Amino acid sequence: MIVLDTNVLLYAVDKRSGRYEQVRSWMQRMLDGGETFGLPWICIVGFVRISTLPSVLAQPLTVEQSPRTLRPMRISRP
Image (cartoon, rainbow, N blue to C red; front, side, top):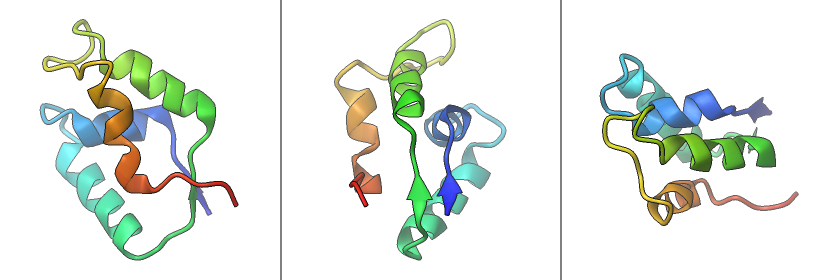
């Protein structure tokens, strides 16, 4: 099992990040391959908080967009 953290999620949405392409590609392979992963609630909350800050991202997400960004991960309980 892979446990994702807030930084990985942020790199995956920040197109200006030097790690954007690498992280997006890796996450897509993980999701397509059915890899088991965990996403702690604290990381979800941290992602929503940080991804909406204009002082962190040049193009911050809205409060509505941020949680929707995580939907493709099909968050579910074991």
